[in-house]
Picture (cartoon, rainbow, N blue to C red):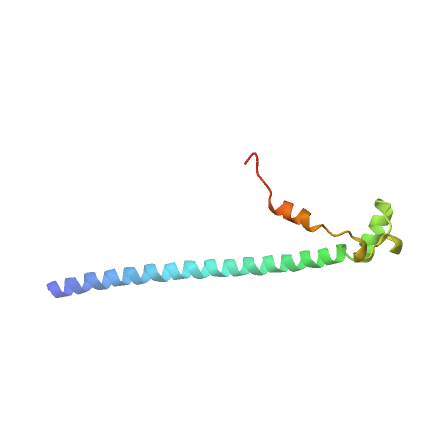
Length: 105
């Protein structure tokens, strides 16, 4: 008689544990599906925003807006200098820049 009662208690506890594990798995699967749907929605939103950004930052559109709203014009060729026209630092200047002292540190 004791064996039957003990077996019934063990089976009941195993059944309860199995039910709890099953409901936990079902909840996690539902959460996983929700997260996957949210990720897909976010990826679609990102793709739309990237397309909008590409449309709004077209060079011809930016040129038209800068000309009409800011009264800007493209740089002419006479304003562009060759690289040789930039004066190079003297060696003494770079040595003094390496020895920076911190008075208020």
